[in-house]
Figure 1 (cartoon, rainbow, N blue to C red):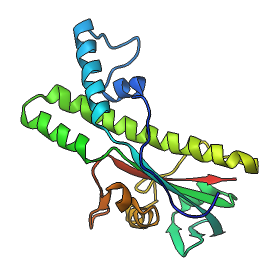
Figure 2 (cartoon, one colour; figure 1 turned 120 degrees about the horizontal axis):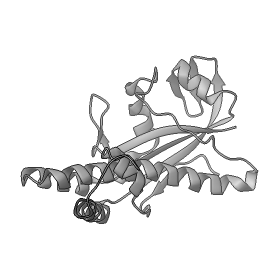
Figure 3 (cartoon, helix red, strand yellow; figure 1 turned 60 degrees about the vertical axis):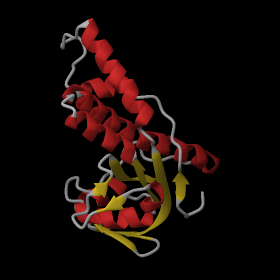
Length: 206
């Protein structure tokens, strides 16, 4: 698997219904939901999914040094985080990844909010969040498919900037390395990705 950025322009996945309902606060076998309410929620979920345009990118980099606090990757990429260092452990390679649901869904959420249809806006928001996260799962599965020829696979989990002691400032390096501008994602001076439903993460190959 070459150490160059792979751009994924069209990620197709079904909405993760159970996770979306969970994000909306519904608990299986606990929360009561009327048939009409469920139909309305499902309809808004389908509408959101039809607007979402999932795209992503990933990059494999060798781990040059991991001293327990600072992780040095090839290409002069350095991260400082004891938690990330422990997560990577003795892995020889790291995989950076990013995904976005696109700007149209954010515009649609804004429109529904302006119209006073908060139910639709909330369902759209939850669907976009969960589908973006599911896109990272899709990317990990895609990478694992390419790693099979090496007899290797990614760690089952991933680590994101802003979690634990892995400062959000590292989002700048992730955004740049993943060339996320090519999938329509920009980054603010405060290291917030735009459109809002955009994420980055790191996994590794033992």
